[in-house]
Image (cartoon, rainbow over all chains, first blue to last red):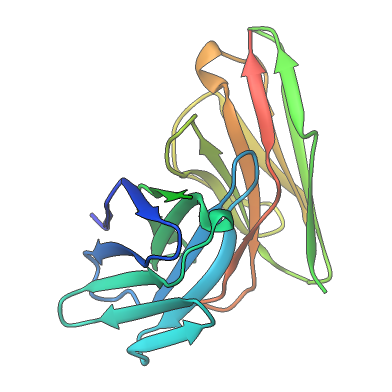
Length: 111
Length: 113
């Protein structure tokens, strides 16, 4: 079936350094790939998304890259700050207006 | 602009009691609506989704049910709660076209005692 693998499950980086989270999807028909940030006790918030006709998208300190051939996409956060600490989820579009979710990455920013 | 309202924010219910969680969306029409559950420290599990009034698709067989009595209202219910129903319940909406972003509410923390 359709699935999305996300790595690592936990990532600890020094404040100011970069963080990279990677996801691999199985359904070659997937063409929409959003990333969500979830803070404790809140619902996930969309932070960036990319469609299959684009290889890279950037929004200030956040960027997403997509390799359709290899079926993987990555989230890059540069110059990390304490407020970047959260759980991040990747997803890939599936059938019937559904998203297939990764298991999440807990990002810890060390001061 | 579109907004999503979900309530209550927290709920403590005894085993065997009924449940009703409500979600409404403003600022859009004919959205796709979703109920997710998230166990502590875990990922997102899709429970139900709806592409229109009265149209409910269930992803996980359990003692929960969903209804969509109005275009922008989605209700999650149970007749008798189990301990295993405890979790963080999230409502979400998506525009009617493919590859639209999914927008979440702030969730309901349900504890079944």
